[in-house]
Length: 244
Image 1 (cartoon, one colour):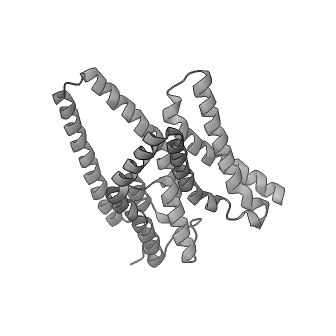
Image 2 (cartoon, helix red, strand yellow):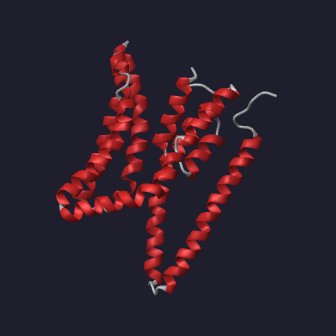
Image 3 (cartoon, helix red, strand yellow):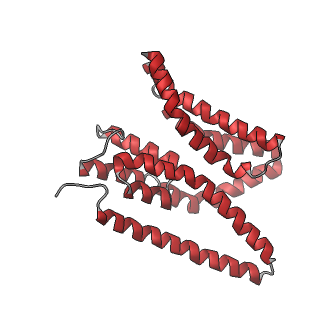
């Protein structure tokens, strides 16, 4: 039987997992609402919290949806849908899938038809995120207490430490952005796209400061992600035309 990454069986399995996760969300939502009322919280405050949380959740989801569509070209729809719906992130899943595909001599530019290659990519995407599930419960509280201790002793150094942690996380992805700059002008395309996305984020920050539009805070990230993806098309065409 020919392998199909969009088979009905995969859709059924993925749907079951996602429905289970959605059920968990509903259960915790109901429990949180009831607990809030037990504590005497104002219903208006609860509704406002739910509304702001919904906006914060829906806005980044547009970027995630685009990621699912982008990965579905090579991996079909069920696998990216599962990974980006449950616990994955757009930056991680795309990076992990591309690295796994490259390791087995494949590419995400075309549909993966070999079940062994598809399985290898799926395992890398799934297992690569597992350490976070283990390390956060085991070390999260200790790290949080350590950071709080540093901030209580010296708030300036505490802020520097947090900034260092954030930059360390970002640097893991910057290597991929600059990986092909040695290949000539076309190798700089990821860098130009990153800069375009950064400019969009700066514009959102300026708008937040100038016109006092607080709602931009919730949409700045998806605007930067979606804008960067959209601008990657004309940037790629322009660079390739210049490079000849």
